[in-house]
Length: 112
Length: 113
Image (cartoon, rainbow over all chains, first blue to last red; front, side):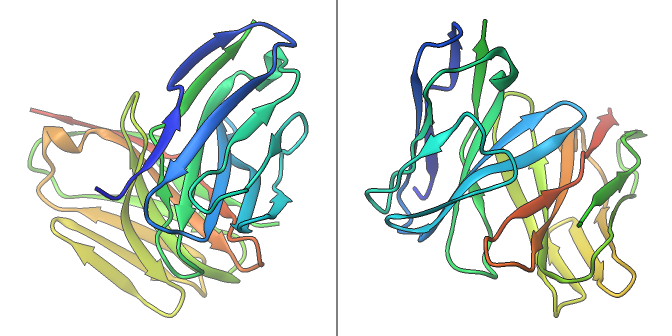
């Protein structure tokens, strides 16, 4: 089954404790992206990757890092999480421009 | 700067009713527009994608139209069912090189049996 998976689905952590949210897709898509969703602000892009070893900042990259060492994986790293990073995070993947973007189930992160 | 607006923010209808959800965007320079469905605790499901050169797309009871020149799209749901209850999100793919989706805040739809 074609899908985008994210882990963990739910995470409660404390300020400053490094964490990684994994994202994996099995569709051989070149493009991958991370969004966060917040009430009243909607979804905003954090980082994106056009292909392996090619990543760039989206609209809200502060406090986040990403890597794209393999085509299927695009982990989101929070080196020192803060409470303002409490949010619902979505990973997406797609073929090149003009094609549907597929989304993972989301990761709900709470930083205390 | 592209902005996407969805009206209404919430809608409650009786089962069987036909309904229209609206989406507007400020910059016509888009590659495409997508409608998504979001269920509580679940991810985002793509419903329809309309390329910038297209006027509409249909899938089952759903029909989406696009008028790029006026910056508007509508999602028409025929014969609504309780299972259609969800939040419907509209997103435009920015005509830049990063494939960024610009999102509306969604319309929360409730269909009552």
